[in-house]
Amino acid sequence: MHCIMNLLQLYKADITTILPLLIADGGIRAGFPSPAQDYVTESIDLNRTLIKHPASTFYAKVVGDSMSGEGITEGDILIIDRSIEAQHGDLAVCCLDGEFTLKRLCLNRGNSIFLMPSNRKYKPIEVTRDNDFMVWGVVIYTIKANRRRLSGTERW
Amino acid sequence: MVGLVDCDNFFCSCERVFRPDLAKTPLVVLSNNDGCVVARSREVKAMGIPEGMPYYQLKEKYPDSGIVAFSSNYALYADMSARVISILRGEAPDVIQYSIDEAFLILEGMEGLDLHKWGEGLCRKVQKCTGMPVSLGIASTNTLAKMASKYAKKYPGYNKCCVISTEEQRQKALSLFPVGDVWGIGRRIRRKLEYIGVNTAYDFASLQKDYVRRRFHVTGERTWKELQGIPCIEIEGLEGVSKKTIVTSRSFPEMIRELDDLRSHVANYAARCALKLRRQNSVCAVVTAFIQSNHFREDLEQYDGSGYHSFSTPTNTTNEIVECAIRILDYIFRKGIWYKRAGIMVSGITPANAIQPDLFEYCPERRRRFSEVSAAIDRINSRMGADTVVLGTQQYRERSEDGKSIKFVNAIRRAMKSPDYSTRLGAFVVG
Image 1 (tube, each protein chain N blue to C red):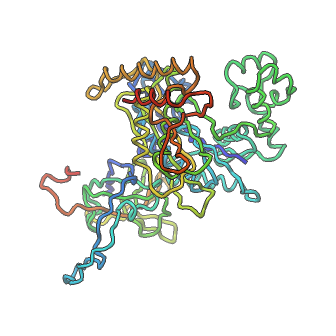
Image 2: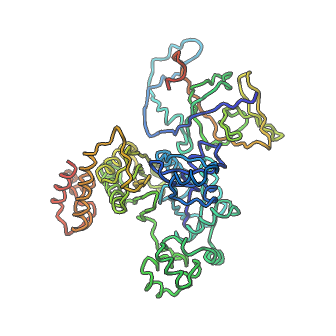
Image 3: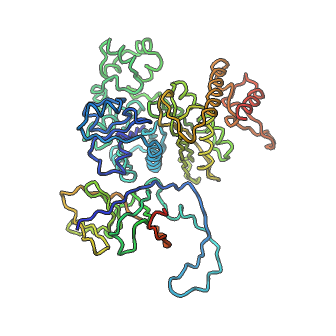
């Protein structure tokens, strides 16, 4: 099935605001609880940490489920940096025949390009010469809400 | 050398960045109330549809043309404009924004560089990072750079960048360029010129200097000189007034780091934009403010801030525009930076008699009061001299010698005027 996931809405990145929040600088372990959480010293401002090139950074919201295999699902927020040169393996917002689609790039040596979904329901898409194709921007971060209301994604 | 960057079909290109499906579809952008066409894509221009055509006529005359119309989204255009400028500032030694879709580049200290190659790279970078297609003209004067940018836009062979550097290139460029398209030659002068058989820029540049001065005064002579390759139009302080935008920006004689000092400058630029809007009997929908550090001082921390606000009901009153500019400034200001330049741009300009008031936020009484204050300020200032009456925020602060007390001085220093009077009246206007 040739399914395009629409990224319906793109947003400009407003990075003029500053919101420094404290960070536990021992790092949070996903395995065993770490006893060393008592020195909360540094602070982090997400705008400064996540966004290196404000002029070329855009936000978008995910619609569809073709990347659900790697945990990217509907309603997630993507931070896209257009200034980055796309490489093999990058998660990218692509523009295929006039439509936006979010996929991983598979750039082979033989110059073939495949757009890889991570949900088995969808098949890889090969980009051919007949396609109008460009990488719109490389996704540098995905922001995920881990508490979802039953009503779905409307909370954003 | 000087460069001029011009965005291709700016409003339409902004829309296309987010609608790649419309990359080849004919597009128009409509004025505030979807009244008439304010911007056309290349395809629409090729169809011979003029700017300003009422939308209903467009629908009647071209029912099956597949033209897609967008209502104007001035907040989007202001944002995209700021992005383009920001990329340019990262690449060129100095950048001066001239309108929402044009900026001059001061290309000092780039001798020995292949400017054409550099320019191509710059255009590619802007396109890649923002999605905005731009054309670049590079030459020894502003007027020639502007001409070069039109060549760059028109002929794909230039690969977005046209450089006029040799005498041969200059002469060829002049001879193929209609005189009416030369920057600074208005419709009235064009008619006069055509009457005496001057059709191309080359013809104009071949006229005798004395003759040009006599017939077309200082401004005509300046343009004439610029076409010869002699720079004489100072970009610094040049105020871009076009149909789409009005820009007032200056660099400060000395660098500034206090918010209060910046406020006075920004308030004055904003007041100036408001005055110009009223003079041409129009209103604006968006105010953009920007502040910049000194890019020639690499030893100092660099920061460029810009922000914009869109009015729910377009305005031209000094009070509203200055207040809005100051709010943006407070928001984008960062402590510890030495600032070198600030500016205000107003965009989304429409005739004042076609305002569509916002249903919920518009307060006719408040607007009427502000309009009356602005009209009164204009009357006094036109009789007594510019800046006789200013808002309190427009006043420059001056510290006393011991640095303890602060006194206010006039917006534009005038030895003949009594500052006290102005201070009190200024404060009264704000209150």
